[in-house]
Length: 504
Image (cartoon, rainbow, N blue to C red; front, side, top):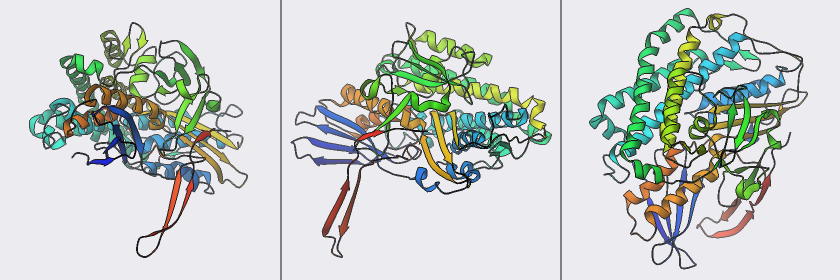
């Protein structure tokens, strides 16, 4: 599958080329390029062309419905929204107030569900969506550059990719009730434990799963090494980083404090309580996209944008708390794909290697959790003193995910703000496609293979474009009234520039 290529004259003598839609990503988006008469790139932008109003239509709903409703944002990462919403609504029912804490069973079951989600999502992206580019080449024959082509020429790679994702989905099914859009996590805890039979079913497969995850890390590394000059230079840029970190500095994809580092590796803030994230992060709206542009308030909107997700997490954590993944992380950093002279680098294609390290970490964590008897506990729920505001944050497969709700005295949601992983990466993705356009397209006659380089840059971030379009505030909107013959009678436009503050 490839994107359609649209070319049009631009009124200012520039030619507009659109890659629409971007293929092999979740959701709908496009990239537009403006070229002068000598084919030099003057402008490149990633546009999100769909709008989904979840932040608005969950208003008025009872809060206990939200963890199930918001999963419908996405069929690939529903567990991430399910758990982020649950963590926010834990606070509404009093978890954290007056010393109330989730029970060990609830906490560990949620973690098991989450790491199953990390495993299946990373497997889906690497093997199904990105491996055709990596295995065949970015400008290879489009008829071959797809998952069917991978299955034909690399059958064992394709088989392992399918089985890795299947295992992650089974972890989700046993903890959430079903593979997609489950109901296992509820405000204050979970609604079921993991039976011994379910545990044993997962345990019988976990050791080959860990082995395949190690194979996937080695495959990602081998591809990087075999194409070293190209992969190191491809879409390279420097960026600040943001993510959750455990109290001891370890990677923790379920919970932690916020850490941000600048592009030189210096700490901007560390172990910040995410319940007041808006003191550190603000959002900007631009008129040409339905996706917001977050930035670090200390640095401002022009220079304060940052990168999230596997590349940021692997580079900025102090260690990964599982032995095999930590060993691979050390080799990754020593190699320089994620770290250069102690500073975060900009190897965009390093995302794939880092993603496979996280997948290995997820498999190791699942193994550890499956041996924990707390998963068979029967103490599932806790409540404390009722609150009116809740913030939930989690490291989703694609990066940091924020859910923020206010609930009134009638138990109805009156305000919601979501900042999803792809939104955090918005400016970083735009920077990546800009760099790739300059490297590969500038001054050259365009063809499908060259344009696929742009898509490869977008895919490296594993964006979920459906999740990313939930803007609040003054979004750009144009409504046209047409008569029965299709003639325009009237147009109403609402502008879109300005800051959107995530308030409490």
